Amino acid sequence: MSTATGLARYFQVEERGSTVRTEVRGGVATFFTMAYIVVLNPLILAGAADVNGRQLDIGQVASSTALVAAAMTILMGVVGRYPFAIAAGLGLNAVVAFQLAGQMSWPAAMGVVVLEGLAITVLVLAGVRQAVFSAVPLALKNAIAVGIGLFIAFIGFVDAGFVRRVPDAASSPVPVGLGVGGRLVGWPTLVFVVGLLATVVLVARKVRAAILLSIVGTTLFAIALNAIVDVRAQVVPGMPVEPRGWSLNVPALPDKLVSTPDFGLLGHFSLGGSFAAVGVISALLLVFTLMLADFFDTMGTVVGVGAQGGLLDENGELPGAGPVLLIDSLAAAAGGAASASSNTTYIESAAGVGDGARTGLASVVTGLLFVAALFVTPLVSVVPYEAASPALVVVGFLLMTRVKDIPWDDYALAIPAFLTIVLMPFTFSITNGIGAGFVTYAVIRLVTGRARDVHPLLWVVAALFVVYFGIEWVEQLTGVR
Image (cartoon, rainbow, N blue to C red; front, side):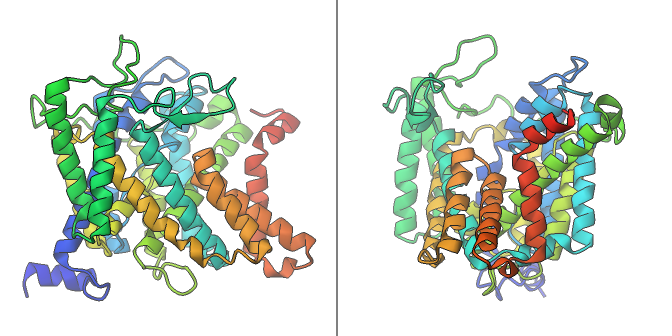
């Protein structure tokens, strides 16, 4: 039996209507849409100081980021057998850097992340996480997929500079707008526009590897263009912000291809440090907040990406989701243990699924590319946001098509679904959208005399989300911050 045949049989490639070649292609596409995290996560974490004024070493954070992403994504592929990739969660890393570290040392902050991951792991082993998935009505599951579609499309537009914050948003009725001052500016934005047009044409013509081809082709175009116009990054230390610059990576051939990883941050965490720094109640609130966000971000991602790949059953559930949820939970703890922040299942996995990936083999490919990224970080930084973002916009469209499956004539379901959909992009959070949908669904069922329609677990989750949304008032009433 050949290696390819053995891989196909283990990962059930044929059963899911795929091929080994398609899985490899999808894994590569996913990697290129999320490779930015190897550069961005270190910038966020190392850019903040803890309560003692200590900053993390940016090179060590980069190594930890790639290492955990590689290990957990491969584990997800081999054990979970689904095309979900894992890396440091955006948003969660900002909470760690700018909220936790501001109150305690870096080891204590990472200890909070480890505790959060272990808490979710216990919920998975107890069957609670899977039970919550099953308790969610199908209409809300479809709404989650649609909301994520809008969310990742918005991420793509913002990352590429096509949509930007209005500078005086505090005094303006318009918080975001087209480019700068209502105009598209900068050569990088042109790269995004060209890449988006190329991607939609390839997808509309049903060209194989459309998303991967668009990322590679747009990157080559960006490198060639920047060799002519020579545009720097938007943010360069010691220099004013350049709105016409590249969002993160400058597309140019690097001076060197190989770098040596530094794993000096592995194991630098303290489980009890947060309790000593801010007290037991405050520390538990911090763990709870991170846990709730991580728990439901993953739920949304699994539903959204699974829906995109036709991997869900007739109830909108992912068959054999237990191992997927377990690996995701362990990834959160692993991220904290390596000082890379909480790791979670990435919505960018939808790029690979959009390119045909259906099995864990794609995740193994993505993970192996993260292994390579440990040594070729300079090469990873070649792909700019503007070249990867078109893929997110197009995948957003593909997820959006599930809006037709929501019963819009049933207001008791349609209104919660609507809030789930719109609040994801409007608040830039999957968790907020899910929470608003759950709470609204439970309240409507209660006041219309149909409380029995709500699964008992969903009542518990809705109550937790009430605490989550009202945490400011809870802190004021208890005097704990």
